[in-house]
Structures are given as C-alpha cells and as structure tokens.
Length: 292
Image (cartoon, rainbow, N blue to C red; front, side, top):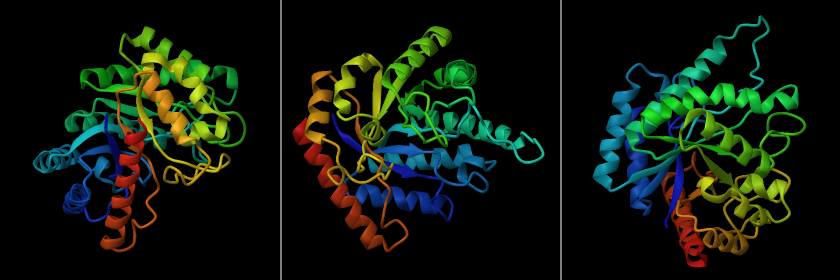
C-alpha cells in the first residue's frame, strides 16, 4: 500500500522539457508514484494531440524510470459521452476529436505502464437510456485498452456533475451494475475508481457502500469537500471521515494506491511554493497510511 498524486500533463506549458522538469520536482519532494491525468486542460495544442505524442510519452517514461517513478494509474479525458453537445451547426467534429483524445490517452497510458485508468460514465438526456449509451460507448475502448494491458475503471459521480439533475453512476449500485455488464460484454476485467470527494457529496457515510464494491475497486481519487461542492481539497480540509474511510478500505482488503486528486493552489506560483505544497501533501499521505 502506498500513496500517489495526480500530474496533469495537459496544463503543463512549455513542452517536453517542462514535463520532465515537473517530474523531477515530484521526485525531489518524495513522490515515487504518479497518476497521469489526460484531462482537465484544452485538447488543442496539448501534448496528447501532437503528431509525435508517442515519442514524448516515451521520453517521459524514460525520465520517470531514471527517477524511480512509476505511474500507478491514469485518467482518460471526460465529457458527458451519453449526451455530447454539438455545436450550433450540428457539427460532430468535436466529438470525433474527443474520441481521438481518449484513444491516445489509452495508448499513452499503455506506454507509461499504467495498470488502471479512470473513466467517467455519461448521463443520457433520457435517464433510462444511460446504461445502454455507456455500454455502447465504452465497450470498444475497454477492448482497445485490454490490448495495451490497461484496465478501465468507471468512476462514481455526483448529481449535477453532468449539468443539472441526476447523474448516472452517482449511486454505487448503478456503478457496480454497469461494471458487471461491461465485464460481461467485453470479457475484460473492468473495475471501479472510487472518488471520495464525489462520494462525500452523495453519501452521509460513504464507507457504508464499500463492501458492495468488492473486487471491482481498483483505484481511488482522494480529496475532500464540505459535502456540497466538488472542491478537490486536501484530506481533512472538509467533512469526509478519513479514519472511517480508511478503516473500511482496509477491511475490504483494498490493495491499490491512495491517489491524491487535489487541485494545486500553488501551481501557477513559484516553484518554492509548489514544492512546499507537495511536501505537505506527502505528509498527509503518510498520515493516511498510518491510519491504514
């Protein structure tokens, strides 16, 4: 058992060297396990959409190996895939571009040696169509990921995250049902990524649902909030009960990483401030492991 932290390659500016410098900064603050986040930034002009993106990812992997860093999980680009918005002319080119980004993030995750990648379920305009839409969309990508020795873990969401109203798979029973059906349809070991911030919004005590996840639980997103907004705060900065959450994970035999998905407050500030923030998060990670 260990902890990891998210590194968002799509918001790093300056190209390949900037990525390598960022890796070194994480290594200098003691992080040896990372989550490669291929979402959260503009696709146009990003590393992922460059013609030589595979070469860039290989350079990142080589530097990570040199630094003793491993990528223990990743995150695919996300959108409401069950109700993807078209532009005013009805042009679907943006959806095709998004799909290409998903394919490339699967390839990149494979190059980095990632075992599991998180994906967001979508919510259809007619809610009852949501499961069918997710099966249709994700099955081919799950099969593609399997060829890259990568598993896809569907993430729990929260109501309102896909716009207004109920969100499909904000309920754990919907999530386990979708994962079981994806396993059946694809023959691939599809899993669950449990997002603690989302769970804190949806459940008074989210640890109560962990036993129902069973062996489907493959990865985590660790962050906190006040129970109403997806704030991505560090653990213990919101209302989540971390002692209870960690106890429940231990009881169910969870073996994956505790992965911080915390919004970096000092990212655009000085390197000194950013490294201080990372060092503090490392201390919080060590405390979570002590609870485990």
